[in-house]
Image (cartoon, rainbow, N blue to C red; front, side, top):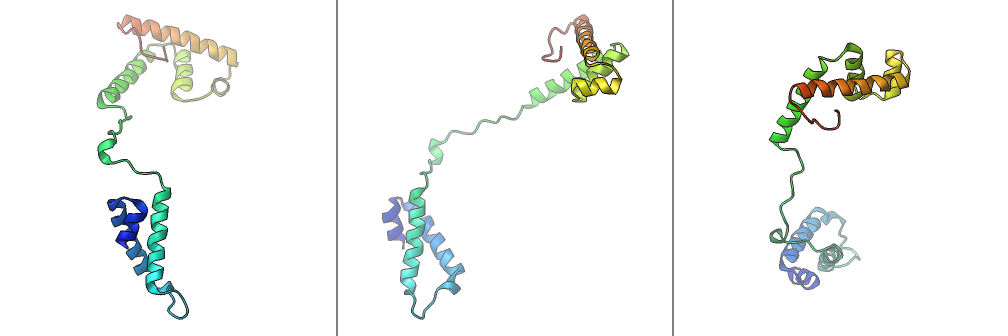
Amino acid sequence: MLALAQRMTGNAADADEIAQDAFMKVWLNASRWRRDGGAKFSSWLYRVVLNASLDRCRRKPMASLEDVDDPQDSAPGSFDHVSSGQRHRMIVEAMDQLPDRQKVAMSLYYFGEMTAPSAARSLNISVSAFEALLIRGKQSLRTVLLRQGIRELGDLV
C-alpha cells in the first residue's frame, strides 16, 4: 500500500499519510466490504489507497514549513490599544466643555452611530440644522483641544 501511494504521489511523507488514512478508512468501513461475489479484500484496499493518492495529486502541493513566512499579526498592539483609549477619553473630556446642543449632536452622530436624519428627528430639528450643529460642534471641539495643546486627533476633529 505504501509503495503504491509513493509511486502515485512521488512523496514519501504523503504516501505515509495516505497509507495510514487508507487503513483507518478500511477499519471504520469494514462492514461495507462484501465477501460473497464482491471484489477481494486486497482489491478493495488497493482501490482505497489509489483513490486517496489520486485525491492528493489533484490538490495543490503544500509548501513546506521552512518555505512559509510567519503570518503578520493584524491585531492592534497594546500601544495602539492604549493610545486609542486615551484619544477617546480626551475627546469625551473636551466634549464636556461644549454647549449642550452641540455635545448632544456630536454624541448621537459619532458615538451613538446614528445617521444625520435619524439624529435630527430625535432632536426635533431639520437635517440641515443638525448638520450645522455638527459643524459648530467640531469647530468648538477643535478649539478646546487646541487650547489643551492637542493639534490632531484624527477624523473626528
